[in-house]
Length: 264
Image 1 (tube, helix red, strand yellow):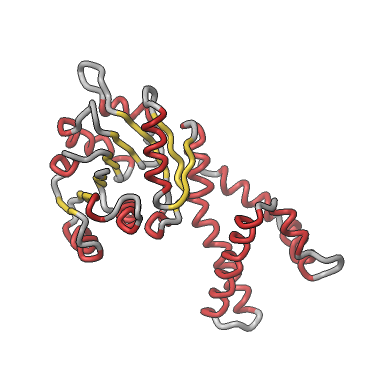
Image 2: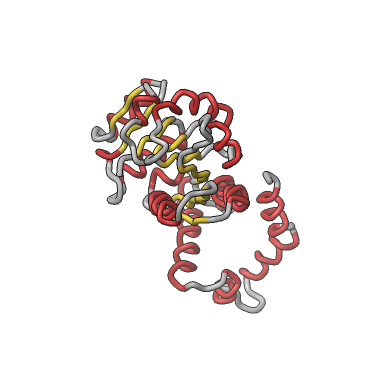
C-alpha cells in the first residue's frame, strides 16, 4: 500500500515517521510532500527510504491513500492543487485537518459531474511518531465497509484507532489529541510537587512518567475499571484516600470534564 502525506509539519511528520517504523507500511511505501525543503531533508536523513518532493500534484500520483496533513485554512488551496491529479475511481483521500469535516471535503473535491473520491476525516495525535497515537476515523457518505476498515487499520499501525461516526471525531480529538496535552500538564504538576517535596526535577519527572505508565499498563493488563484499581491501593485512613479526597475538594474531576468540553 502506497501512502502519500501532503504536509510535513508536526502531525504529517509524525504520521510519516510512525508509518515508516511500522511493519504494516514501511518507509519505502511512503511519499512526503512539503514546500519546506529543510523539513523534507530532515525526514529523508532519518528515513532514507521515504520519497520526498515539493510538488504536491506529482506526489499524489500513484498513491493508494493520500493524507492531507495541512492546517485547516490550507485544505482548500491544497485540494485545488492536487484535485486534477487524484484518481477518483481508485484513490482514498484522508484529511486530518481539525474541523474540516466531510461536507467541506465533498465541496472541495466534487467535480462538475458530481463525483468525489473516497473521503475520510481522521484525527490522530502526535504520539503517532512513536506508534502510540489514538486515532478517530470517520468516512464520508458512500464509502464501503472494506475501505473503512483499511483506513482504520492504517491508523492502527501507528497506535490504536476507532472507526466512529463523524459526530464523535471532535469529542475524540478533545480526549486524545488535546487530551495528550492535558495529561502532560498533569505530569508537569506531579513533577513540581515532587520538587517541592525534595526530589531533583529530573528525578521527579522520571517518577511522574513511570507512575503514569504503570497506571495505564495496569488498566490495560487487568481490564479493571479505574475505580476498582483505585480501591486496590486505597486503605482506610491512609494517605492515598486523603490525597484523592483533596483532588475532589479541589474540583479535579469537574476541571478535567470542563477542559474536555471547552473545545466543542
